[in-house]
Structures are given as C-alpha cells and as structure tokens.
Image (cartoon, rainbow, N blue to C red):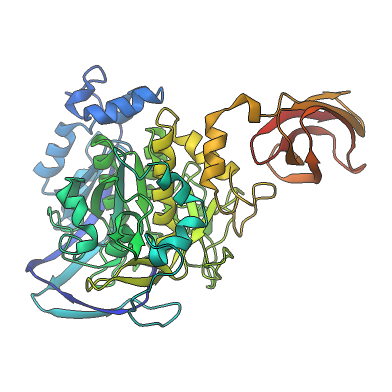
Length: 557
C-alpha cells in the first residue's frame, strides 16, 4: 500500500454490512480565483464557525479573516450547472473537488472566469458488494492477536510503558485526562468503535461530538477498516487493568478520509482530509491526529517528489498548516518509510507547523521503519518520538488488548499526551504547547533527522509552561559582542541544574556545544572560546537545562 496506515499485528475479517453502489467518474481539484461577492462576512463568523471555534481563535489572538469564509456558493452552483458533481469544497485553499462525466464538462468549467486552474485527482471505479472480505494488513513482528497480562501498573496494564515513557501518568494522576478537550481523528475507518466495550464511555458520556465518512459521504464511519479503531484505542481506550489511553476522557470527532477498501490511492484522499479538517475546525476541535502519509499514487503523474516535501506543496500539508494557523495542534505520524527506497517523511508530516511523530520501541530507541528527515527545504523531521513498536490498543474482537506497530500509533499516543498537557494550561497557544513538547524532549540539545528532539517529558513540559521565575535562567549577557574569538558570559541561575551551552547559526544548525555540568544557584560568569574557524556572522547562544533556557544573539567579527 502506498500510504502509511501503520502495521497491525493480526489478520482481520471485515463484514461489509451495507451495500454501496458502484461509482465511476473522473475527479478534479478546481481552484478559484477569489471569494468576491460572497454572502458571508468576517463580521458574522457565527454563520460558518461554531462558538467554540470562535473562542479558540480569540484565546490565541487569531483574527478571523477571508480564509475563514466559505467558498462562494455561486461558484459551486456554476460548476453544478455545467454538469459537475461537487464532492468537497475548501475555504482555506479556495477550491472544490468535483466529479465530471466527460472531458467536455471539464473543458467548460476551465473556461469559467473565476476558475484559476484544475488538477486531476484520479478515476474511481469500484464495487463493494455485501460480502465478507479478508484483508492482511501486515505486521512488523508477525505476531497473532494476543491478550496482554498486567505488566507494571494495575490500572494501565500493558499500556503503562507507552505512557510512563513520557511521564504521562503524572498528568493523569494530577487529574488531566482530556476532560473538555476535543480531538479530531482522521483515518481509513473505525470498524466496531460503536460496539467495542473499550469505547463504551465515549458514547455513554456523550463525548462523541461528530462522525462522518468523507469517502462515501455518509454519517457512518464504522463500516470499513479497523485501522482507525486501533488508533483511537491508543488515545481513548479504557479496559480496566489492561489499557488506559493517553486522553481517555477527551471528546472525539471521527472522520474517515482514506479509502483503503480496494487498495487504490488517489489524491482525492488528500482533499477528503482537508474537507474533514475544515469541518473539525468549524466544530471547535483543539487537536488533530492523523496517521496517514502520502507520497505516491496509482497514477504516477500525481506522485509527490521529495522536492514536494517542502511544507508548501501537497494540498494535505497546506491544509494541515492552515489548521495550525487557526489555533489547532496538528499531530501527524511521520510515516513507515525508514527501511524503504523512500526513507523520508510523507505529507502532511512535512508541514512547518505540524508536530510529526516518529516511532520507538518499548525501550525508547528508534525503530528502523520510522521515517526520516529532513524536509526538502532542510528542516528537521520528525519532531518528536513515542512508542510505535508493540504499542497497546483495543483488540478488534473485544477480547482485551493487542499489540500494534507503526508510526500510526506513536502519533495518537503523542496526540493524547499533547491534549492533556494543553488541558493543564488552556490559555497557552497551540504553538506554545508544540514548543514545550520539543523543549522538554530528551534530545533537545542536538535534534537530528532520525529522532528529532526526542521523547517529550510531560512533567518537564509542565514546568516549562508554568513560567515559574524561581526555576528560570535570567537573561544572558555577553561581551564583547560582536566578538573575535572569546566571549565573557554572565547570567544568574535561580536553581541548581545540569546546564548545556549551544551555539547555532541562523539556519538552526548546531556549530558548537558543551556540557557545563551541574551549575549551582547564583550569579554565573565564565569565558567562552569558540572555534577559530567559525565563520563571521550572526549566531544564537543558548544556555538550557531541565527547567528553562535563555537565548542571546551574538555576532562573530
């Protein structure tokens, strides 16, 4: 399969419980030139945004602008009048996904004055009869379905390690379990979610906010594919003494955007995702989780190249970054390409405001299948890591838990953890939560394209977000600045800690680092001698420890 859907440790049998009519047609993305003469206004956002979505923007100081306005309905009506069927529309990208019966209809649409351009999305032709279908989704370990006995903690059972690795249990014990937070999950389907006991509380407590199938355009995403079921289990599953999800009390929105039933891969699935993202935004989602990663398609002319992994090209990536601009924390699996010919992350993990998550084993070491960076424009990816080999989720047959493997599962584990961290500090912005996760990670001193900043420590992140003055470094002073080869550094430390000194160039590349060892509280002064071959120019000097960091711009003469 061309997309990353994780690897699941079992063979599953899906019973397709309803009939879907055969569908054929050529589908295209149509981009509009403007939103002129729109009946909507930025002065009346309640016409197209929920109060919760408006409040999220207000909390983070995000202005409502023209990108929030729906596409002009008159433009959509014109497409329909020409003979097209409108599948989806996007206000952020200002366009629509359409299906046309023949080439002439497309030609007529391309001549409309408000159409900027068009791009093929793929031909769809398939039947889904009411029958039994067996699918093998593969396995890293080739292990069968198994029930995991209690391992380390009576409440968490086998899921303890994937949470304890990040001190997530500390936040759970403080009462942060996702209450009042809203997570949107985008996947290939959520079979049995509405019947499995591990999700009972979502329904009994009315925490299922929305559910929709953007592939077949129905309100029932529970028919096809179990991948989303396992993903949801990592966040929301509750099985006493066997499984506690990372955000077990959050509200959830479930969206099927990936068509994995017949093994096809077309760019329309990216458009499905963007449509779902805009719906989730309008309905007030706080956090997105998606375990989908796109690189190649059935039609090779649609393939993404490595150059496309620049954060600005793939429509799904552009949509993900727009969601982040609207104040949503977007958490994306990095992909399972690490051992293949294409080793890089896929879209939308290349987004510059997307938190992409790689996979570790139970010991916290990177697993070989976890996709690598950098993006094509040189940014470090993945951003952080979480357990993605032999992670624990709900068993599809309702009998306890099962092992699942892939970045598909490290992503939701981290999405749930990020959600409870944000719950603890709800006045913070999405990017402040993003930064706290990076700066609390165990590889923050030297992030790289294998593991990014490393594994976040939520207890440490709490400290970073608390802004406690007694646990912060004061402003760094350095002289002379500009300097030739030596600097006198001064700062005050409020609490004893293990300090590190880092010097980076303007591209963020580490050019010098040293461990300062344990530094006691009080005024500090020391002389720094940088390498003689250091080029002239601007640099940042950072002193960091487990509590905080302080940064100063320095200039080499």
